Image (cartoon, rainbow, N blue to C red; front, side, top):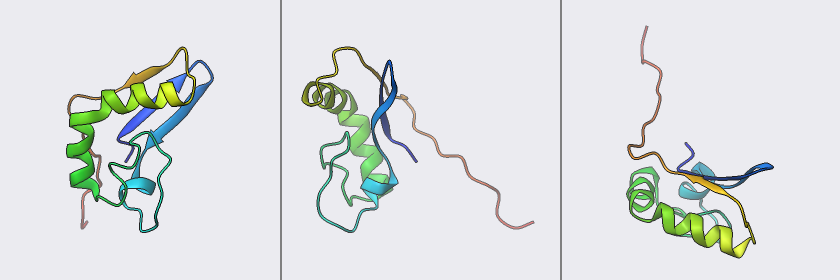
Length: 85
């Protein structure tokens, strides 16, 4: 699940997703700046609710993005398939 995504006129330029919050290795270069790295989905969702706008602004500054759009859904959701049949 993508928790935060940053877009500019050329498309997607950065995001925080399962590669980060489920990480088992050191180092993080995504939008969260390491706050969600290896944290697991629930903690990462809490972190993202609290800090997403700050992360987007910092990521844009560090990557010299003059024009960008950071989209944060107020209520995260996850789609799932029904179990069983």
